[in-house]
Length: 118
Image (cartoon, rainbow, N blue to C red; front, top):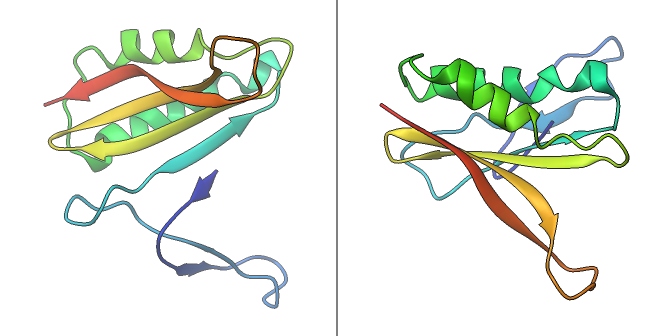
């Protein structure tokens, strides 16, 4: 998972190789957490785990979370990597999936597929 806009160190086995990341906050400009999943079925649940974590961070109730996870996991491709983007939005969470634009070009756009609100 790739996080943007800020830095907080995370320990690894080798202290000289510290990766930077951030915690998403409600009071800052729009920040995203990115998740790129390879086309392996056993990794599909990772998208749901990130969504559940973001819902907890936003203090969104769990009503409808199971259905939202199923919808999100349904967008995981079997033949190519899938990119997801998560963000805090007001009093909720947005989950988006990257998809190709129409017209056969290589351009992509983010499509909102799940919105959880409290």
